[in-house]
Length: 283
Length: 317
Image (cartoon, rainbow over all chains, first blue to last red; front, side):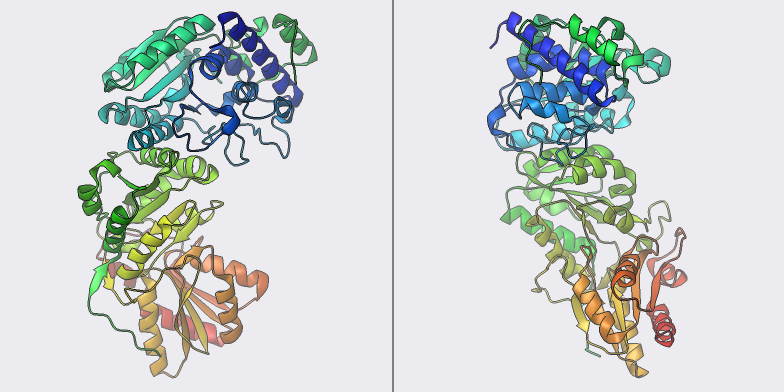
């Protein structure tokens, strides 16, 4: 596995990709994408057992990942490209006509690394449970990972899936909720307070882990390794990961206002300066 | 008029159950999911014989569709089972995004479709499901007419790569198609060659079309009767060839006029071969409680109304 310093460098490159992608088309969701950069880099460059050069939809013998909150596609695409699923230069096509990098991720254009469409919220956990059940039927002991937004948990299907996964002991799944506390109309507490998510998931029968520092690469890697040790024990595993929306770009940090707004030229320059790399490899 | 006979009436849902059971034995990749209606869907035998491949999801249809989509990742062929209303309207966005747009090989199997669900009333009698499903790009939509055909269709869709909506029902209806008749997706079945009019029917209305054909024959009207078991992809060649021959059309289905079989055929003919057409279908109305037979009569889905539609359309030639 790469060193922490190496992973941090990748995180900076991913942040550069995110702001450049959304700037280029003046649309997309930078805030949540930036906040989850450490999670994605930890997963794809650290913890996950996967084969980027030979993508197969079935993912037999591989760990597989599902992005349920598909609007943070910029971070997903950047990490997929940087880990070798498709050419990095293709990031320049994000949200443009005839691109495989649709506004929200899809299998429809055949982009390697994506296994289901997401964007309409709340569906990814159910799909991941299905993939986890297929792994059990195939005697495949690899892991299924999912990521969700905290606002996304307001969708009812999430709780249908949460109930099922615990009741049927789907214990080869590690879900993570990005607890950035923000959604489109404001903070989650303003829009629809959800109370204790730990208490809720525990009541549903999940093994719940708290990750306080979701924007610290070493903390995220350590937590994902811990979570893996919690699999196979009869309970699905949930990581409640605190992050900061817009992390790494000071004027975007901690505000719902950058949920779905792209930076202008000047803001892009600032964001790139704040994520400076001596040997940047921008697409 | 060719003579059709049957030895017994059977429910199409039991044809599904029997087909699924056979698939359980012949194809280890076939898995089944049900949302608390195992008995109603006749999935009991599969559940009993293959407990490791049967997933009881409880009353949570959205989750069921998602899990089915996920099971395809890893090579499984999932068959979901619940009532037609809960298989479509309730979970439209889940089917749209996680199944159809994602191109997943999920078989959505729906019982108790239409008015013939009967006494439960309009909350459960979906008459819009064919329309909802046929609008989804890449979705195959099948509505077989009797037990044998439903069984054959169930087996056939397992070998078809891609999402399928298979619609069947609750009441017992004449089981007249040959048990060994191969089911070809997208291929219309010629039931009677005629010259004066063509009746295109689907599902439970196919037998009613045969009854209508007999009455018409007695009055000297030669009706061509074609079973359109696959609404999408429609057998365009069969529709156009028959329309060219008889030059007037009646469609018959247990569905809303908007979005159903008649709508598909009217679209095709309007583009390729404008032809007078009458539709026997529910006309922009919800159903209600009653016995299946009472409801089919009240909403005009019977042989009498097909005969009347034929006489009307022949005059429009």
